[in-house]
Length: 284
Ligand code: PLP
Image (cartoon, rainbow, N blue to C red; front, side):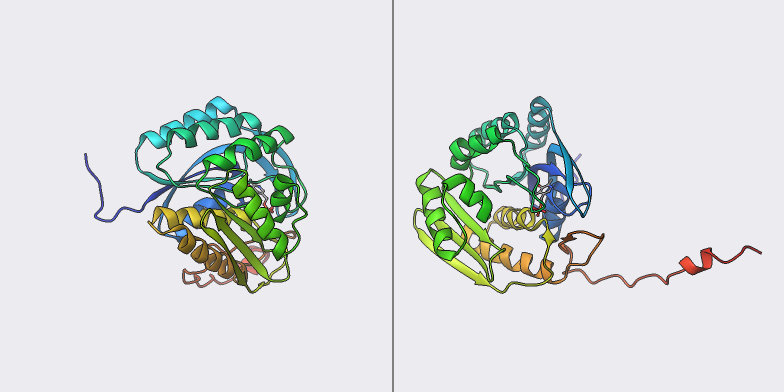
């Protein structure tokens, strides 16, 4: 049986946590892949309990289950790039290390997720240490934010100069390529560094404030662009432009933080008429 289409979408694998409010983690990754014309598959590292207001708990997946899920997905033979997000536990980080080691030809984007913007730790200290010591050397590119760059380098990363220093230090520590994301600064600055040099991209800071899932979306957009065959620098520039527009077009879905509008490129459907008032009419 062969159902192959003439131009199949590249398959991209997300290894990340599940956010039931769909703003971050696997749900954000799959939406980002689809918005780029990629088919997303996913292995869950942890279930989180969260809504737009906070992350209240997380439940890491059994490492053996994570390992078997990834092995099953890779056995289909179509994955063109891997995005790694929240890992939660050291044991899960070790599983991912093994997978990246045995698939060196697959471009991998490691979003070094340590803590949510609402302040919940999403990786235990052992996991953070393993990511810093081991996993950053395995990935094709890593995408720490200011907090994660500080935690991994020991530097105070609060402005563009410090971002550059941290990016260089992470390359010295063994990362092949680094994008330090500075979306929380006055200007949305990203610094990209590899062994060939360093470059800063400066974008406008766009409303709304208080967004949720920006880091997940940025790293997934890079992975999708790599799966589509683009070079790293182009993948980063395109991912930044995508995230900027997805923030600009974001809309609120609850009383707390605002998820990105991953499908802003699609024509917005016209809303059906609001019949809620009819429901309160007395029957008969
Ligand atoms: N939940 C999951 C599953 C995540 O992967 C992340 C970030 O990577 C978050 C929550 C936190 O997202 P943010 O810090 O953008 O609110």
